[in-house]
Image (cartoon, rainbow, N blue to C red; front, top):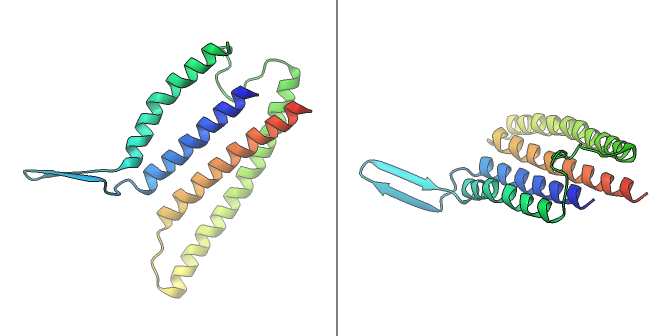
Length: 154
């Protein structure tokens, strides 16, 4: 169960960092200007890069300490029939969250376009889409982990 919680937590952090990196790619932290050349640094892509380097190293150290198998490196792995059923139940819940969330996301994006037609305000569909996709990925991962843990404790 620790393995699923650690992997799910790692994935939630990854999804949040990817979402932030795409939502605010050019939020200015430090601007470096040279002769005819300007670079704007943002914290979110930098944080994502650091995370992509550190997480596998930390995960490897934890898995070595807890003596986890190196063959089942993904969340959908199982070692016996009981875990196979647990994975199936957790995957069903995650699928339901994803499909329901996608339908809701499509409705929200359509509503945003409709809202902008009547109010003549420009609402960024890109921003709303990335935000909704990030929220959906986080919710589906959390629902998978929660269902997995609940089924495991039965």
